[in-house]
Length: 127
Image (cartoon, rainbow, N blue to C red; front, side, top):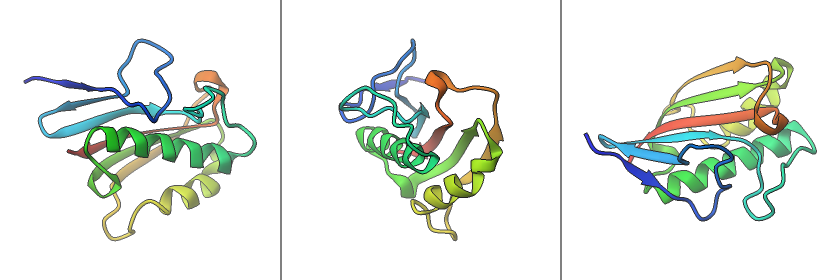
């Protein structure tokens, strides 16, 4: 099995030793994205809605760089630091998927996320 590392000009640069995405066996594995603005490198943290919109934009940029898109997502993982934010995050996340073809997903509450983000999302998609 070979793997192809995806470099993404329109998404935040990794903040640790990891790749934004890897393509292997016809799948693209997108690393968890936090609400970093790719232009400024600053965190977007005004509201959980603003954070979630930025995260989804970052995931979209990585998917596009890998030759994929939202329609090809088969699995998503959402990490929240406060499950009370679930409804807002779910509302925004849902704007990217059709209910009939939405990917498998889990959402978990965690103690802390990198750069004190409140939401992080990773996906697996078909190429």
